[in-house]
Image (cartoon, rainbow, N blue to C red):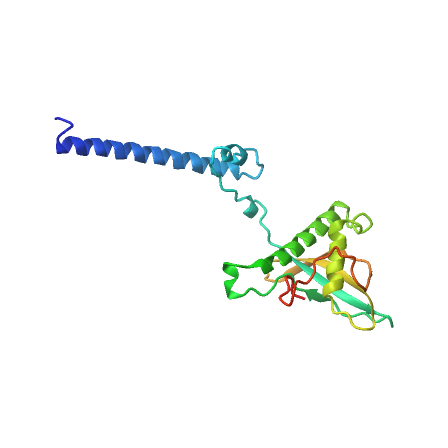
Length: 209
């Protein structure tokens, strides 16, 4: 049968489509295997750097495993008055109000993200130092967090100092939350911060007070 006949052309096209399907299937299989190896917990196979040089991307899902983030971080503050009275702990929110257009334009998320990164940095430094304040209270993240607390804590005319606590909460099997204090600051004298903290930006604050 001549390849120029309709049946011959159809057979040739079928052969080409079959070869293309096999090629695409092999490529997807290789990509899937590389993705699986790339996301192994021990990170023994890391193809991201090598493949990116030729324009190929391998998804990285290690954020979700093997130890996904299940804990929430909380920033609590209390104040000390000049007469010696101490207020109850109250929480400073880490999030901010998201308007409907935040899906497309959300510059206000940068402040909360910076605050979250500061808290994580202070927690990490505290764990590395065994929970002591001496080795972390002069670090840039700690000093910036101090300034943030000064700026956003509710300070009255008789307030002499404030104190913050970083708390971690983790849900248990009973639906309750296990609370674990990680960092408790020294008393912070009130007054104008030294300019290292996260500042309010206009009436539309980047970080809700």
